[in-house]
Length: 168
Image 1 (cartoon, one colour):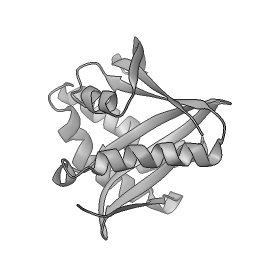
Image 2 (cartoon, one colour):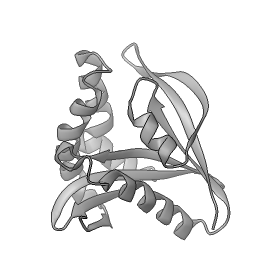
Image 3 (cartoon, one colour):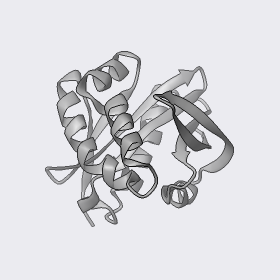
């Protein structure tokens, strides 16, 4: 079994996050989204300027490593007093199936418990056609609601909102 570690990303990592996303984002959504929407969403979410903006707005990014090789990333944002949003959790294709995703999920929960030592909730949005739904259910999350969220340029995110209670 591989040894995984994480570190909190800084604004100096915006290009790295962009590069990682360019490897994983198209692979994740090529069967779900049209190419035009995929390109629009990639720019909207992962241009270095937009990653930097997200960090200023409270997204805490983590870079994950398998030994010394970058294998994925995640970001968490506190939405209100007792609610956190798992904004992003991605594992590079070459590391899928190595339990890196489970490690990242647990790192998000560990971070939330550290900054919020009382009961709270973590939610995430996941495309309703994304096979990752099974992963999130395996991690203990439940479908709570669904919605079609306009993101600009005539595109929508057609998502389930999944959640999990986090106890200290």
